[in-house]
Image: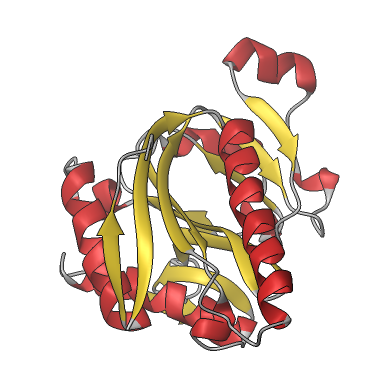
Length: 237
């Protein structure tokens, strides 16, 4: 069974978390390159990071700037950053009340198939939602987790997913709206998908939800879906 080192980074600016991910990915790429010479893949280290970001809009490498409906001056007034990133997907928002997870995994130790990896990330969140009596589903051709994706006019996205993979090492990940202030999404076309809504666990349940309980539910689902064992460490370890 593969081990995955888990760290909760707490609240952190997006760029700092991105830099940390990038360092972990590059170290694994270095280890993998060295290990190839001895045909040993056990040197790479799998990680899972949880973080809650300060308000930021991030645009994926294939995203369209036209899906950003707010100018730089207005962003400054609202106290939200804008960052172009190297993940897949389009524009999204990260901020308080949202559970963001970044798996840095060596998929050659799991299943070297990006499509399957994305479906597994979706499956973990679907399991979490089921624990709250909510039916999370996939929407054909649209990565992420949705509620009522087949009911026109009621489709609403609760979890966005965008990843990057280098030498089968992953980074970036998912953003699950727990108690997120959904008004932040008014100034963008979320994920570049028009005429569909964004929702949160709190909105669906009609009450605030404890972030810690959602985190623990996601971790349990992660171990189950990925067939791995989490090793808990502090951010300084």
